[in-house]
Image 1: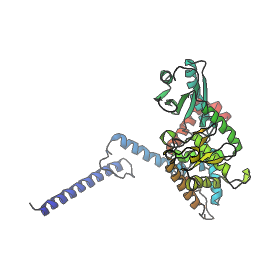
Image 2: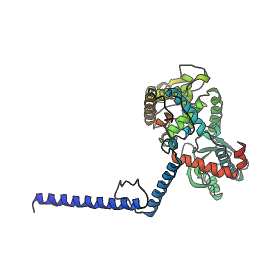
Image 3: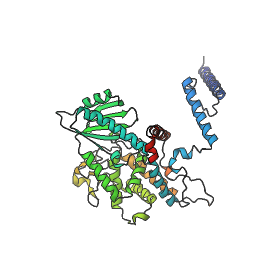
Image 4: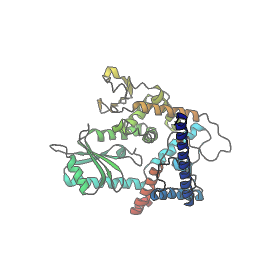
Length: 414
């Protein structure tokens, strides 16, 4: 047999496989159409679309979309940008962005049900801890303490007491016996050892540490600074959500947490050269300038951030923060301990700088947009860089329905 004959056989086999694949895809598509699913697209013939569970999930999704269409809901814009529900925006882009930042902050603020839920989570944990160590002290800190938490943010707790060794495993076993966690991890070899778990009833993640005085002290400082820098809160909430949806908000994975984000925003407000009365300040302008500073202008390898006093920058070389890692990451002095770098583990700094720069470019381009005079339905400008996913919205609805029924008088009073 010649080489040409071999080639013909290979081509023939390939054509037959393609025909078989096409016929199989058509058969499965027809099967799905009989089930009433008209948006089936076969992306991979290896996927088991005939699996009854997958078919049911797809069918449920289709029915959900159909119900939304019948109700006249715009499930494209309003599902992704729920802070615009029932809102109107200015025809002027920079004013519209200012309004959106305010709407976003209002939407993300905790509801009475969410506040009650977190109080109950903390109370259940306190009962376990005081049952073990009646003379210990339990303190909440972090974003929950400062009221800068997102709906899915975790709760940070520190326990103060006297032990020959940190009782991480003792606490973990006690929490399990009380049926509080559904997932748990004891991280004993970290710089700050913690018991990390997810509360089974509320699905809220909790981190518990021991004898760490800096956490509560930092939280008290933020509460004080929030009153001094009144525009910090809306900017912090936007930046937190922005980094959350890009997986750049976890210090354990090289991102930056709530405390570092607040210090970034605070330093930006301290060092801003343009001063205007607080009541006439445009949050859209501030947001764009924030992304410009930390995305386009800031030299993370050489310059560090200090917020004590009126705020300043410092030379990382002079301070001695010049090892290989610190030349690649942002550096922020801890206000209560200037020798500690709050973001010393933020090895994702290059990615953070890149997404900040992209956000600056996107929002800056939006400012040149001209809208028609008959413009009615708002198109989200803030939504060009962030959104609230379906899981978060469903979780908030579940909390409202569950804890609203559990505590009706609390909800009605609010």
